[in-house]
Amino acid sequence: MPTIRDIADQLDLVYQLMQLAGENRFKAIAFDRASQTIRGFEKDINKYIEEKSLTNIKGIGKSIANDIYAYVETGEMPVLEKFKEKVPVGLIQWLNISGLGPKNILKIHQQFGISTVNELKKCIDRGDLAELPGLGAKSVEKIKKSIAWMEQFEERCRLNEANDIANEFVQSLKNLPGVESIKVAGSLRRTKETIGDIDILIAAEEAHINQIFDAFTSHECVVEILGRGETKSSVRSREGRQIDLRIVHPESFGAALMYFTGSKEHNIAMRFRARERGLALNEYGLFKLNSKGETDWEAKIQSKKESSIYEDLGLHWIPPELREDRGELEWFTEHEQMPLVQQEQIRGVIHTHSTWSDGKYSIQEMAAACIARDYEYLGITDHSKTAGYAGGLSIDRVKAQWEEIEKLNAQYAAEGVNFVIFKGIESDILGNGDLDYPTDILAGFDFIVASVHQQLDMPLDAMMDRFKRAIENPFTTMIGHPTGRLLLKREESSLDMNVLIEYAAQQQTAIEINASPWRLDLDWIWGNKAKQAGLFTSINPDAHSIEGIDDIHYGVRIARKAKFDQARVLNSLSADDFLSWAKKSRTSKL
Ligand code: DGT
Ligand code: CA
Ligand code: CA
Ligand code: ZN
Image (cartoon, rainbow, N blue to C red; front, side, top):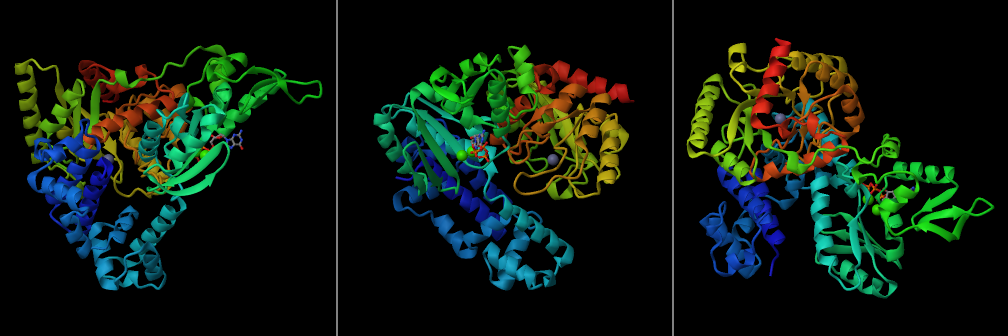
């Protein structure tokens, strides 16, 4: 019996192959929608399959339901087999190469009969690719760089991917006999934006270790056992990720958890602090030193509870996301807590796309999804007119969209629904730093997210001038995804973030934390600077679908890592206060 994940993966494959095959966009999107729906489905999907009632689930139509039934019965999905004949599966990896879209991928495949990245590299080196009409030397250079970039980072994955894999393992291990505690450690516990290997830690008595490792290495997601020892085993998952599982004695769980959470820099600072107090800190606990200045293994002070180790070193417990040796030891020496924004404090969903531009759902559908999630407002920000490739809105379309939003708002008011949609736009920041509409149109929006989407590789000085001009524009409420990076896929633009943060704070322009796991931009590393400058942010999902809305959770985690408290997060305000802030930001610059 295939798992939910298997089914979702198959549908996803269809979506990707359809893109490559140039299949009708809406047909392809239907598969993407179905895949995401199934992946996030909260009830028992098998029941729907047995009863052949999948079509009762919103987002799954009749033909996709039949594809799924066929897959469950035969192990093959007919539509997938059909598309596999049209386009080789190997080409899917090419979709990760920035500068290479589905159309060109297919063209290259047909022209040269190649379907692997290696063959593509050879094709570039031979100079053949540059000969292809419509490509040319400059874009080939970009593709080449992008491949190198992709290969360099194959060893890491994005936060959401690691998160899903770790959860799956934790779920299946936590109820095994003898498991007293289980925790994810390492960079994932610290909420780094990309993850190398996934570290899991279990507290168990020795007698249970073998059985736990047996279950771990034979987990259905494991494709390769990389090593198995007395206290640590490593496996590779089918996604290609390495997972390290360590089992320690319950007595030293706290010390081990601290050690394997890291960061290395935080650990070093903590060990130094222990030394200063005549103590030794290691993965087994906090110990006294003997007369020779060595660890006295007989004189253990603490090892069981992580928080107690911090306390025994004159600190309050430090949340894992702050453990990067960026001032956290100093802070938690003096303070019991650092106020950090929480998911429950987020009241509105800002920066979202609808079918008016490149989103997959209508404004009404997006709003319904926000209401279902207890949010109080939705800021629709479709693309602006220059972004023709993403269905950017002409002035007439903007006006028509405003009408639709007003109608929906009137409807909510009439029905007594406490919800409001804001008229926003994700305005392109043009090459010279201008926004994308004349003033009278800009003035008609409730708020504006200003983002760079083209000419991302301008030299530093020109890029800084461009951003500064956008920041000081009265109509810019906030800057979107400042560096333009796509994690593990596309580099950041050259920017001096320290200067930009300072300037934005001074101009009362916010900088978003784009919560998409592909971006997580503003980067948390600028947290200290942002706090010192008093920068405001908004934790924005940049959602192109209903499922995308939930990326806000990743954004909140990054915002915490970046030391934002509720007071500096705009979408933790009420709807009225959010609007007032936007207005105030505007009038202060006019
Ligand atoms: P990753 O896997 O590259 O995303 O990053 P981490 O932080 O998960 O690193 P990893 O998996 O190599 O090690 C997990 C933790 O173990 C790390 O955060 C801190 C600790 N650790 C590893 N090696 C050392 C070391 O040489 N010294 C110290 N003090 N701690 C270490
Ligand atoms: Ca790790
Ligand atoms: Ca590791
Ligand atoms: Zn954007």
